[in-house]
Image (cartoon, rainbow, N blue to C red; front, side, top):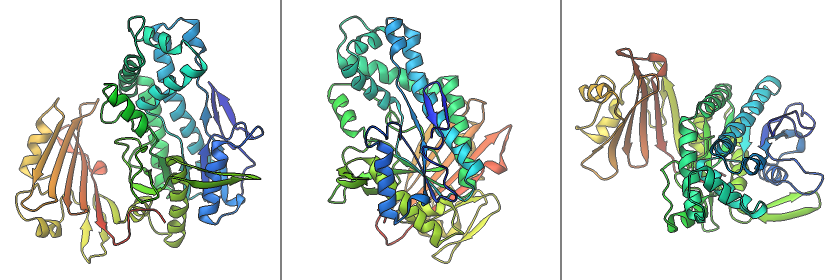
Length: 435
């Protein structure tokens, strides 16, 4: 049963409400009475991989329809095309937000959320290309709405879609609000101990074909709107154990699982499928095993273990004992044991004089690298000005496969204590593949 419908958004329980589910699958289940749906296939992978029963998994309807009627009715006026792009972002975010809220209210024992859908500027361009097959003339109308001359070719139209989508996804107030509301729900879920696993997307081949046609894209054009510090991003591996070339570029992938020829079975129907959609439920099942084996672990620690790292995230004043015997202290500084490995010449923390220069560079976005004397030892400094004028600072310190991250926010002449966070990732012997 679908819980609610609003502006072509379908959310809520896609089946009866389970009593105490362990995993929620957010996906498209609409049309299950007419054939096998994407959601049923991904759910079957969760069930098989995790050795779970139906009652362990809660289906959540998470889908929206692409309406092109307004574009045709308005003959491709600019605002109708912008609305089409804006809605593609806002409705997708709102659907996920609604489901996270419902799960928080009614499924307090839930441990894992598995989400095999994605949305990005690149996905909007792919949507236009796909819809042109069903709605001939759409591409021309979209091009008109984006200010192109009549007769613009596909590459020119898709370039315009990407540029407009990048701008809307980044600057539009409705998208900003929807993204903020989603991230707030994702944060609350993480604080309750829920691991949120999301697919990286399968735009690799599409991105390559656009690049070959001369279409330019920003670094985050193919990154899903669901990617944030509270979600674990899943990529697909080939049979040979290598990242699949269909993985979306620059998608922020943190964990990999098999994504080629993944078996699914729904009722009397079965088959195999490729994609990050089918790698994601495998990681969700692996995350559940870790959560049950280590009930005191945070989602951040579980994500780290899935990626082959011992991982800790600390607020100011918190401490953690590391597997190497050292103690990590949340104090706004890179810990001394790291510098025992690195040596001199690196930024030590928020009280380092060099940091003041980055923070005081108002109105400028800074990204700066400090190389070490040994290969694979370096720091990356990032300082960006937020919309409210505050300064967001990140210091990333790398040595081999290990790294330490310090994040802080500077406003009104001082650091904001509650927004000073340290993370550490120490490599483990396990391979970086969910199992």
